[in-house]
Length: 301
Image 1 (cartoon, helix red, strand yellow):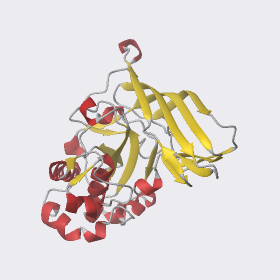
Image 2: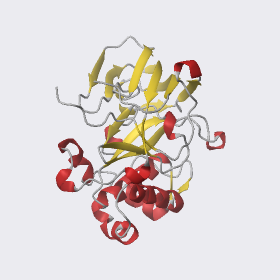
Image 3: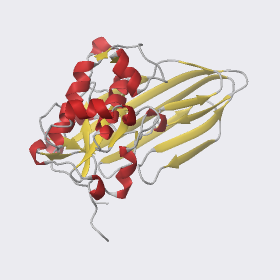
Image 4: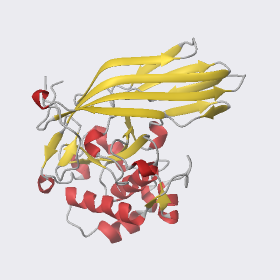
């Protein structure tokens, strides 16, 4: 596929370390820690180290580019180290030029993202969505209004939610982390018939007061002819989002899912940006343009 870009490129050198202590009976793991190969994200210098000598099974989803790694670990320490260089290019557009797509005109691959899902119960938020956003002009500005509403209504507070917290829970409690902000925004978008999906990356640019670097959840909404990036938690810089996975909600793209008794430690993540004007490499920054790392519609062969 041809890379589509009308902006400079972001290059990130990424290093991730995951540490576990596995019960003597062993445990099964499903990881989504390898950067996705997409037309807008080139992965190079990739290395993966697993401390135990175990068999692995890798699978790449053809539609999303999500990469999954499965393994069965023996009892004792398990460490994974992943490193790669990512070149990310962005489609940039004037937000005022981007409209919504009527349901009858949505591409088939986007239709699944207007339905409720496990953590994004959009069917329970229809009245709220209509009251708050139903009379707003349709387009990018309406999705921006949904993002801003979630940012205002929910306080970013670490260790206040867990893996079962849903969009409705977040709406009630009004606290959460990036995952919860994303689920609520997605549910509200879907309640307005706007396809929205959950995306995972890293939180480059986040305030150190929030804690050490970590994985990050954000939102992509389908507008015009592609998926555009939104960060309802407002904690990181969207231009630096490395894509690991996209799905209906967090259940589809958890960076690690464990089956068995496992003690976990916080991930260690280091993302270094390479700046080199001669190569068109720039530092990530906040901007007023609409950003997308989706290649958009592809020309017929």
